[in-house]
Length: 371
Image (cartoon, rainbow, N blue to C red; front, side, top):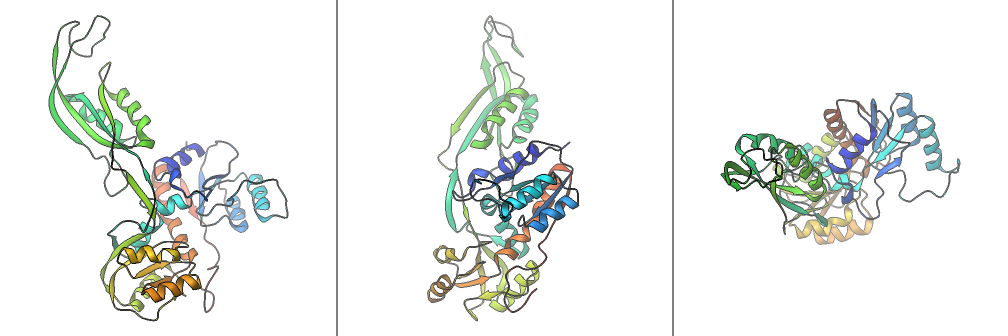
């Protein structure tokens, strides 16, 4: 049985971290009527009125969107207000709504990483703009040799050894000898009261994000055979940085027209605008899904003169043009809506639950005609 709380905990504390969202953002619970069993989930870029109606019609108990309905707390309900009307329809239809916005934009394996994957590009120098850092801790625990696998499995199942990347369950094991003397009130797993003991042990070392630390310690103690496990927790100077956008290396050299054709094909979009007609062939580019034209300066600092994004504004386009940065506007919608299919796959795999993607009926903003 999957409950709303299971999905919230996964999306806010495991797959990504809701604390990464921008200060102005309002990710998380949009409409929450209490923890309940979930059998079918709908995903959509936006919680449009017709999307809510379709999710209810298809029997979904939960709708997950990228863009929040609310960016501020509501001060009342008015049927003439579109957001209030959507709220009423959702509640009447038994539909709760969650939204995960800038924390997904900045997440590892989030929207920008997925665009790079679609374009067969390899991320090379991280994100474009620094937004914050997450504390990182080193866990060291001493375990009897025969129990090393059980303890390591317990702590990694709670997030230890995973710091957002292409590897998980990372750690180091060194063999040695543990020394201790059980006192009168002890209940030792091995050894005799008041007699010094030497036991074959291993030292397991791994890293833990702060958000996982309490759960990892609890799992470690529960899996450990000793009455009083010996372990160290050390806060590290190196942290996990995060931010908007990515820089990436293409698998071959592209002309501007070839790259635009690739974007059109992979993002299923017909009309694209740029601030330049042509540039020299290139292999590196930057991407910021949604509205990221203002990051052209950050791209330039990274040595990149091609930025794929959406919501290009005239003055940003002009300034970027004069600085030699080509901005490709593939629209806010197209650069992010495609990710909902990937997120649906992730949720379905995690919870073995029915997940559907509800797309908007057309490209909302386009140039030169409808898609």
